[in-house]
Length: 103
Figure 1: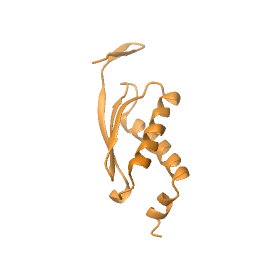
Figure 2: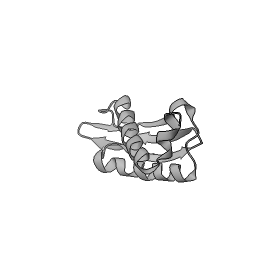
Figure 3: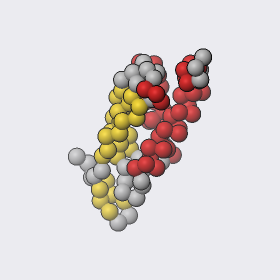
Figure 4: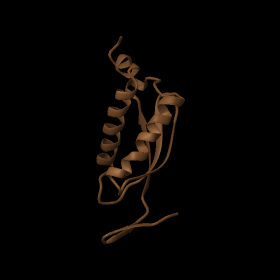
């Protein structure tokens, strides 16, 4: 257990977050999940207070263990993670555009 500190507080706040793919489509395989892990490793470069400790997933969802400081809203952090990963995944994998537009 690792306590973290900021300004006027000491905290230990870990959240188990599960994010499912849209319509529960089975879009994750070894390649896409590994690329997602690489994207998530870069999130703390821009948001140093967010620490993504573990990432694992299945074909239609991703599990993350995330340490979030009390000054940040959990919904805001999830929005940051989803926006950044979605953009990068669509750039890298063209099949994602086809999966969601019925082609």
